[in-house]
Figure 1 (cartoon, rainbow, N blue to C red):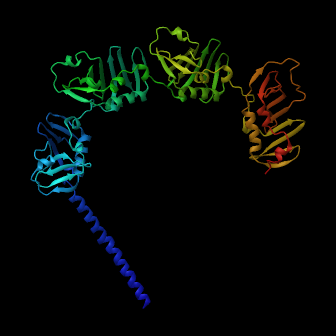
Figure 2: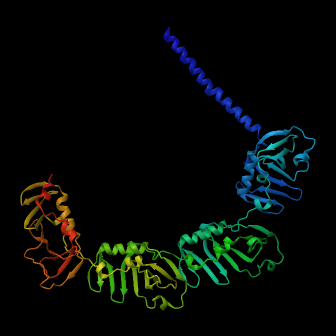
Figure 3: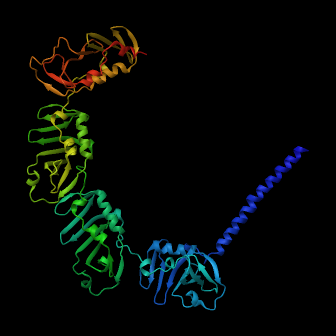
Length: 588
């Protein structure tokens, strides 16, 4: 019996839940929808509106739909409409609600500004029906306006500000000046009393031409185009002027031409004298009306060519560089990529190996460096900047034989930066001192200072003598065994690898042909000796490290018994194990 009772309770609960879900909630939602619809000033969908009018005593402003996404002004004159503002107004009208019915029927509509309303809004839907709203005075309290449907006696208090409904011709007509798509612009020309500034694009690369030609800054020029595109008429003065001279447009002080698209169609803006409210009078060539533009556009079009020149020092793909030449008063360094395409070789001032990492770092710095600022677009005297001739020159040759260069002159007044110029261009720029230092490196910085030359995978035995102790390591599979001074089998693989990496990356700081006898190290008792052997006991490399140089973190060293003396950093010596415990700790 208890079991049957439980089932009954479950069934009852389920029935209640289902009733709530499928009857109660939909009913409440329906009531809410009905309430919202009942509060609507009028019922329509914005997409169903074919045209709408704002009717005033002195003028009727009518907009007609022109396709799905466009509007055009039909009266009081025929001009394109402002799509965004037109759609915003329709949305405001469609969502408008009234908070209460002020009167079911009023004997004195003048009390609400509705007897002879100075604004009527009429909608014509695609099905041919028409709805009209009379808009009266603003309510004395709150954000509301009095209104009345044309076919109703009710006076409503509509929850909208009057200015949200009372739109003028300027609000609803298209105020954009240019019609072009920014990405399609291929040429810009700005003419003024100072001359002409031109921008032209070829294969997505912009060139700036003023008093000379230079590579353009694509970001700056793109920003210029988008700002021009966003410019709007601030007011419309005359729809069909008879005399352009009255507006200063017979001899404009600024003229902007844009060329866009495959057909290279042009749009030209003429800017004349300054009018009221600090606005300038303007018109498009081929159009009749005169309008105003603001100071922001004038400032934008009055910028110097230097503002649009490429701030990248040199534009190139580092992987495409085949040759690099650095020239100063003392020497010329010519570096060429080897035929294998991986390493670099110095050809001048003498043939020698280059430090591949140093050359690649230089090219990376060069490709990623920017100018500090442009100084002079077309200097008359380059000697003032120490650029005739330049103090230093850099040239890179790409695989396709393209040549790019950089000339470096004297320092700026603050002494921390330098004047620079690209060959073939007139503009002089400032280059940060730290950037110049990274790029114009010395032969010492660029030549290979690698002390030992061996292949790591060929090393089968490592002999170390340090502090009167001898250590011998032998390769065993992937790891290493210590044979002397005692046997330690199967040490961790990194033990030998770390020693070889240290030796393989060892660079000298300075090379000396010889030392005075009183300074020469005692090679009979060196600080450190290391010998590398292959599997057949043939010597691959041999280095001796002598005494530490006083007050410097350097040691004297020599390789393979040569007479040349090298200076190496003490850090290298510190990284080589020198006691048995170092090997014992690394045993497996």
